[in-house]
Image 1 (cartoon, helix red, strand yellow):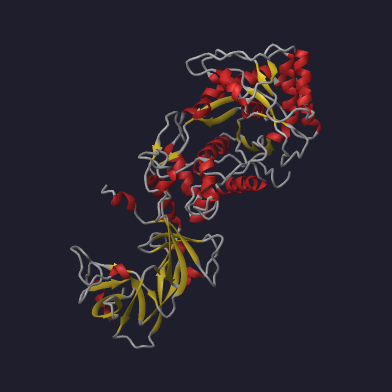
Image 2 (cartoon, rainbow, N blue to C red):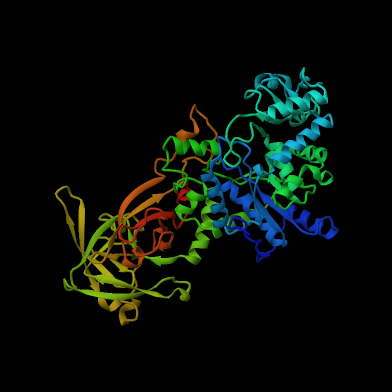
Length: 586
């Protein structure tokens, strides 16, 4: 088996058994004997990178197969050449694996092009498909509306022989793009517009990334998708609610082609060594993952990239899986979100804070702690010798001793956060202030004695004295002060670039284009801010994608593209608390 076709992962039921209507259907089908094994698939189109919405579909289709001891195929729906790209195909595979899943087999809709063509010929021979000469605009006019029935095409009653001849000539490349279309002959008065003689094939003379120039015609999604499911023996075809109105057409194609009883249609797959055992699949719809402050339209995501609003598909501001990964979001955190949201038939919008909460929960348990200063102000401990240099031991995780400890250098001059000092402190301010005391994390209590300013009156340096008896383990350690602040030794600090990322849009529903604004007007100008910061040495010399909690600041990750030990680059994954709720007064 090739690298693209790993063996199915063994069944690994989650700690808590999920309960939802899809899993109940699966349980009932197994209990009744309708199915002895569960086969699912994840069928993305390789015309862009996957986004957060796809994470739910991946977790559901792969997760159910894993829970019930079945398997899930990854099938690339490559029926639309020109918009598809091998780069996207590789990205999709990478993202699925990053989320923690492996496919049973890698398949492509293009694997089945010959089967689709033969099946279309069968539909023509059965009198339920015809070649139409109407162009796209005329077809829309004949289709009717939600309140008015459609009209029959003047070409609808062509003979079987004429239709077979025309379709063969379409296949041979005789006709120009858009000049002829193969359509199903169903019901132009159907209340479900999808059933009004939908297109099956269109003429499109464009090279395909897998089949080259072999095909001047390509199948439509509704036709190719359901037959692909049938060919692969998919038992439960899981898709989002927008496909609910397409289900009658899905079933119509599956039933009319009837692949299980017509092996001559798919003998070519067996001849090519592609295992095939067709069966009738069942389509089941579920609500998609909609998050506030997000855009999940592939077209709009592509526009953000092409018009340079972001730095690529993996920009950490993007809610593509590649962007979320680069920002430091964890697969476990995303899976936790999907598990908590569950599966339903009810569309809803989930607050982005719920996602952030799941990421924080995972990182709180899995990210080691480090100290960093993002907006530095120098603090000089004047009662220490100028050459003072010592090494302190800090726990890597305050809640988990298994993380061990690390050495942190400490010297006379340290960097602290500028907002940890206030010359005129507001009410309730418990950090450093003139003549005030604060605990320096792991060092002891310091008292501010002098404030150094430049010619413009800006504070450039603080002087303080350290009470050495207040360090942990010494007699004065019990002396109480209300505030504790973090620091980094100025002598040993490592300069780094830190990219402070935030939500990409400034309003919960950027798609609601009100007051004459477009969704682009709601791009958050503060979604990315770059600062020069200082790190303790143990934070800098790490591999890309290493995640930390920078104490009191948030969770950060070493950038998977730009980070190097000699030139560290960190991205903020998420703040320690929901600052958006605080800003909104919640």
